[in-house]
Amino acid sequence: MMTIARIASRLIYDAGTGLFTWARREETDRYAKSWNGRWAGKSAGTINYLGYVYLHMEGHDILAHRAAWAVHYGRLPEGQIDHINGDPSDNRIENLREATQSQNNANQGLKVTNTSGHRGVTWNKRRRKWQAQIQLDKRHRVIGHFDSLEDASIAYQSAAIQAFGEFYRVVSP
Image (cartoon, rainbow, N blue to C red):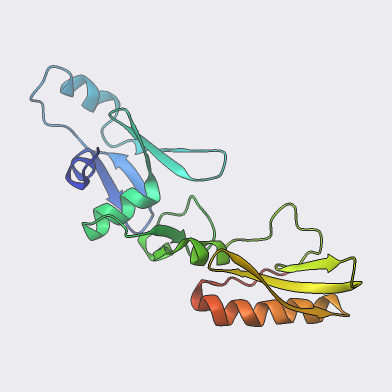
């Protein structure tokens, strides 16, 4: 288990840029001088295929946004960490906030599988109308059925703003 103190002693976090650099190590062992010459002051972390920055440290992979939160606030986040602007590599402290799974989902963009071009709106073949639906408390709830795609989208956005408040991100088609 990697502790906050251990992370803070090995990495330097810049809250303004969201970047981590490797800290200089005290030369108490025979490898420290070599390590300092090669890594101290250099950028730490790599971006994975989803766009999140990972820090590989002492055999552990640590998500940089969770490490940033822990180092900055001195505690682990209670739930998930949401990137306010939706960019998973932007780990500036002002872009991070604690969130539940539902709140984090509300701040996502359009899924690649979306065919209507609007969040929460699908075509209901049986009724031959646009259906607006939202997921709350792990359950899908139908908001209503509409003749126009725009009306269904407006209904979804209204319900999402009411349910998720500041966490809901409006996605333009």
